[in-house]
Length: 112
Image (cartoon, rainbow, N blue to C red; front, side, top):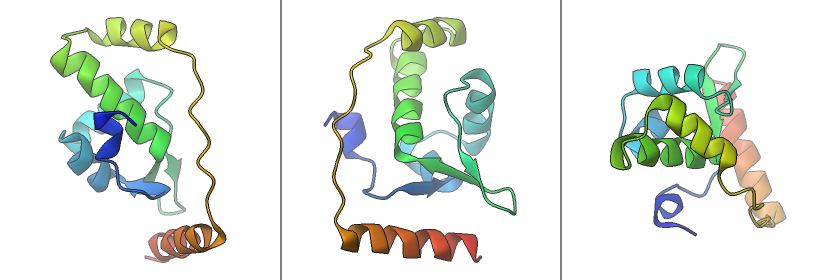
C-alpha cells in the first residue's frame, strides 16, 4: 500500500466532502477534475449526490500528486495516467461482516 492509499479510510463509498478532506482539495476542484479525467466516474444517488469508490479516490490522489507535486499540466497528467502502470491491484477479499457493514452504510447514505 502506498503512503497516499494509507490515508484512505477502509470503506467502499465516499461523499464528495469526504474525498475533499482526504485529498485536501476543494470540492470544486474535484468536480473540475471529473470533467478533465473521464476515469473519475462517481456513482450518483437518486438525489444526484456523488458517491466515489475507493479506486476513484486513489486516482484523485494520483492526479493531485501529478499536478501539484510533479507540476504536470492537465494534458500531461492525462497522458501519464494513460501510459502509467497497467498492473492490477490485488483483490482484497471482504468478510460477510464487512460487506454487511458497508451495505448498511450505503443504505444510510441513500436514505438521507
